[in-house]
Image (cartoon, rainbow, N blue to C red; front, side, top):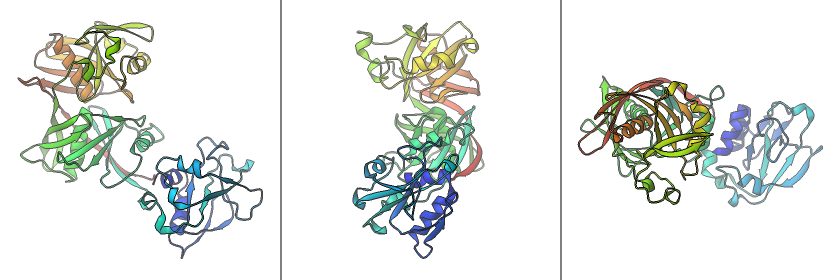
Length: 413
């Protein structure tokens, strides 16, 4: 699947070649930019050139049926190293390739002949569909791409990295993926724009819930939806208008301030049992952080300086990747307006500054509450809107906010 995806992203005609190979009754393809009819058999795959037009390890490879100017090399190890590839059972692999100056700036495919293999030995991934249906949703400006990934095996992190790119992709703060669950009604996986997987997203779970409820993938039972996440099972109370979800209240769990559970490298902090107003150096500035986890790790700075004046984009990466945090960390800066309202900006691990974040808003409010600065219900003003955070008598935090579907589409993969 990954190999087909890499090809079709550059040139849809290459996928037609794969299609013809799988159905040998149509076994000739004229490649764009090649000018040669290529007889194909069911025993081959394609890889695409590297971005940037450079001749390289997997770059500017093209078929050379006549052998003119071609060289032959063993590339089994190279192909196996591609994400999602599996050719161990397909026997020896040879590649004919050449590169000419007039190919620069063009998309040229590479024919890889898997000798001695039959179509039945193809990896299952190569027989899957190569388009991905998705929905783009946003909650208080925090936007996610939602995909029904049930029964599909692929590199979702790589897809999130591709689709999340501004201008070159859909543009998003990441991907929320639907999968089956053995412990809840449905499972959510969250992928950041850099391809890494997050444990939990407070805004993401609301948008995810709208996606699955509106499409009847999973429906509320006793007015709630249970969702398995990397941070545990979460309960969602959807707010409906007709048969569509428009907002939700989410049980976020009890925030933990225990360093080992966040996690923080306890070897660096001595015998501290809580990290509150702990000084660190980041990008040449001293910051006093309060650390906690709310399904994922957070470092919060409560400051007098207006958060709008703080150079978050410049300093955020230094906090995210600070040596204290073995799994990196999300970073929030906070102004307390009064006991029922705070202003926050958020730098998400793996995403950078975002217009809002559900877990980030929950962490910001929880840190302010731990310092005794707010009451048990707080409006968090973020760049994308307002999220409401509250706590019950057990200390569990609840997040409430909107969920809006922006558009749907098909990723050509």
